[in-house]
Image (tube, rainbow, N blue to C red; front, side):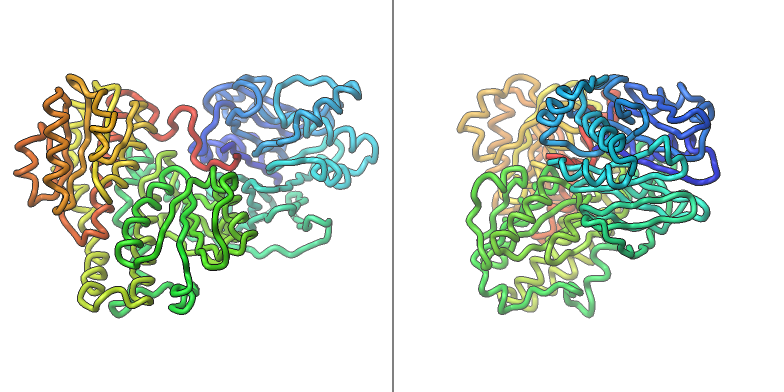
Length: 613
């Protein structure tokens, strides 16, 4: 949520800031702005709406002169989207400008304090409160760094701040707590950003700021400080993927590109962890003795990651015989969870910055549980907070609606299940070998599902189903878990009201909603449950539903006797089948959204990385 970019060097800053912000549009936003330190002081330009409006307003940044600046894309939390609520915000004196990602939870109290001192506000934002407080402290002491430290000591909540001062024209100061911020090392220029894509075309050498840390930098130098103001040395890290990975590369949308990147992402995630027919999770300490002592495994996650965890519950309990819970991270801290040193808490997050999931990890550690992260972004907050981390290898995911992030999370969950089952002696050699073979085949099978013939078939179904405004997704067992993600894709990108139910629950209420033309997507790939799910298809057909059934190739003929539309997927080991079943659902959501004219990569009201509670 929100995007921050900062630049200091010898080139004009504004075009660089606007270009960097364009690489952060995927994070979700409703307005944008820049502040550049020019010859006449701090020049702020802001605009509600898409970044293109700001770009047009400034001729791509060329009309705003200066070589030091900060930029921001805002996702509204305090006050409606508007020019005056957009960032950057100025202090009352106009000497300080700052951009902010996060939420200041004690903003109301601080605002009252400032109002009592005669400060007036031009916006409804918590960010202007921070700018005004910083301005007062700066006016009192004349020392920007000291004023920043006094200010952040008063803040409750989360923040990543990029700060300019009119009296210090060459420097930018950055500080963070519970919101992502990286520093980029350049040659004769330096950067800050919320995420790597914003600065990747300029540098691949970065440092990740930890909570409480501050960076003070100009074009040629940087100083890092810890939360107590002590100088520290930050490790320089190299970004291993190129800028082309964060560009559409000829695809109409990032979402479609990332759907097609899934075979490679799966190979990159699975390949290094299969050696000589065995799962090898290097650097992960989950010994047989530790696993035998567990009372339960608890997954914490949000959104699609939560639905990936739903698959994990089924397969871990079936194959490893360990009680497995899944909990929404946003509820975890508030439900007084039962966990201790005999609980393994597994946090799943693509970005590694999801605020609720990060807090869930911290709460689990406070209660004595061991924590493991399944994360895509190296150096992210959850990766650092968890005791251990298994990285997915999805590469950068730009579309707000996850695709390859979800399927690589599933791949890690399979690997983890195989590791635990073998460590506990719950699997025989032949079954284990079958799992390994199925994982090795998986990328090729996904490629087959992305063939042109299959794409054309799904496009045809999408054309027919586009007219619907409501949908049910139904399935049983693992199929039901996958339907949750399929339903979410339709909601996220096509703006169609969609619900998911275990197919056996239809008669317990939801069946009352079925009427002529109601869209139902039924997933029926579990052989022993196929007849039961098809019986549910028969029930909704009898009430006029327009049904699309996703089933195995060998069951397609039988499914066609009851469903008007059938998509057949290849079969694999039942544990790994979810990774194939989700592909047509991703494509269906995508093509329905395209048919409806939706902004597929930037769906309304949503952000890619939810870094505030």
